[in-house]
Amino acid sequence: MKLGIPLLVVAALAAFAWIGTAYLHWYALFGIVIPYAAFTLFVVGFVIRLVKWGTSAVPFRIPTTCGQQKSLPWIKQNKLENPSSFGGVVGRMLLEVLCFRSLFRNAKTEKADGKLAFGSAKWLWFGALVFHWSMLVIVLRHLRLFLDPVPAFVTGIEGLDSILQVGLPLLYITDVLVVGALTFLFVRRVVVPQVRFVSLPADFLPLFLLLGVAVSGIVMRYGFRIDVVDVKELAMGLVTLHPVAPEGIAPILFVHLFLVSALLVYFPWSKLMHAGGIVLSPTRNLANNNRAKRHVNPWNYPVDVHTYAEYEAEFGEKMKKVGLPLDAE
Image 1 (cartoon, rainbow, N blue to C red):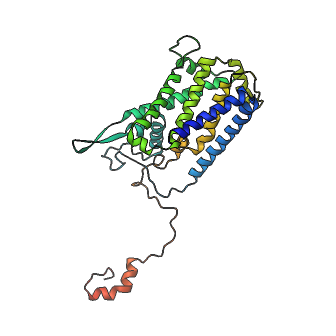
Image 2 (cartoon, rainbow, N blue to C red; image 1 turned 180 degrees about the vertical axis):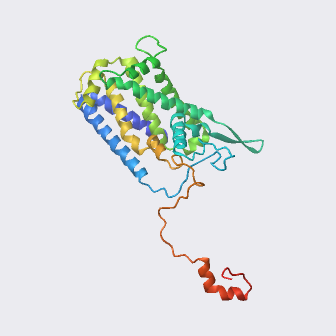
Image 3 (cartoon, helix red, strand yellow; image 1 turned 135 degrees about the horizontal axis):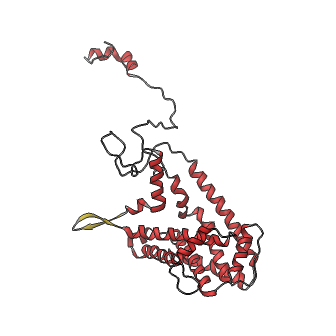
């Protein structure tokens, strides 16, 4: 159930796009209407999630730290692990977003000779890093389809990505890396018993969607050899709001585009939204300056207090009788 349902969903989406274009010729639906609708739903959903998180009250300063806090001058502070300034928070967030610093410190816990032992678990960090950076390069490479003229940085990225040229068309390194990384993340969820036990269909669906997008793109490039001019015409029509759906393109292009659209619609409401939520996490984006500054809960309301002087004025005689010292004396 965990694997079958997500796999069937992705296969059904791909089959729907193939049948709709190969036999029913719904080029306008899959080439214009659905991409526009998917992009609109993605932007709206993304903004809704960010606004919801951004307006959530954070009454306490709760940064997660694992280093020395700023203290006495002769005690060295760990400015990245326990930042006390805005600059430290920025540095910590950059390492978190670009290098997955907290995931790098991830450790596995096992029993060794009856004792609890902690060991390195860097494969998850490495697989996640390879996948995310490969996806970033792939997205940047695709800008050549939406921009005219193509910026120099896009051409440079494409040249570096195809530096290990093997025949024609060019073999992109990230094409291999992204499939390998996604396969590793999938196998890890299936093979490791603890991870398999806690995995849900919602954990496998994004993996299958991303694999479907990557594999359909690779097949389209190296198998069907689709005319790039037609793809460029379709892409430029979408971004310039003068859409055209060229007929005669192989259905694999619309399968790829439809799976991308499905991923965009699903993105804001799934665990993939950690891409936008990481910067709004109070455990990461707050400075730990509790020793230097008093933070008052904004929800606090005025409370009638009974001071010690008032307590003595009320019970002073009784306290004096039992021999308790009084400040008033």
